[in-house]
Length: 343
Image 1: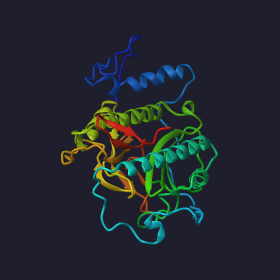
Image 2: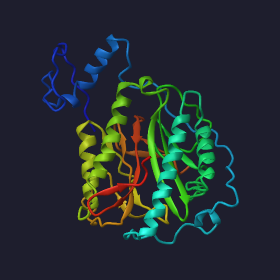
Image 3: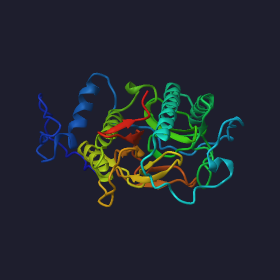
């Protein structure tokens, strides 16, 4: 966790340091971890721009609506057919060509649904309305919304909507989005026997409505996700993904959530291997061509620690500060990775 900037008794210089240079105030810390944000805010404020930090109240649980019906002709995963959760996790061995081909289709369908929900994000819209959009788009593609009835207790909606300090697994409800909020939308679809999984964080009211800290958080989180993806190659270890993500996030002054991880995926929603988004020494599994998994770091402004709501799903930051996340599903190739959830 980054310490707060020291109090400066003189104004910043006309020509400010680069991000990794020592701060002008003499604290000894790097500029980006000391006065960079406050200097940006000072100049933006003079131009009538965005505030430094968010002022929204903390998110509270809303009213969760009824389950949405899935047409009878759409194939369900086993847990949605009343067969319970898998007795064991798929070990995450390399997938065959047929499975990967089907995952490309499922991944693209998930990306299309996510884009449609993103277009619906706006002030005054409820998170349950986002779930309605996602449900309509998912079943229109002949797919099942994977989160629906997954887990214990069974998840009651088809997507996750995580607003502001909600880290992940926020349940769509009567919560009304406001300009300046950020909301992560997590979409997974089950299509032709495999899952496609992706998510993104959106600015409510556009990026111009957000405070500077939230803009920086979302930017760094997107970059960190791609840093992790770029670390994927045959012969690399799972640990390399987390190291790349953690290094980028911490250099920007943010923290990486540790309680939740990426995961293998194919016929099972959550399979091996677990993909840590921080440098985990025990994550020594070698990556092989044909392995499929998600990279989905959750990056926080303050503490990396999470606390759970009573619904046993919603995770929020322990200090109430904001969190952002991006996610892609990929397959390891002979020379890197193919992202399966791009449009």
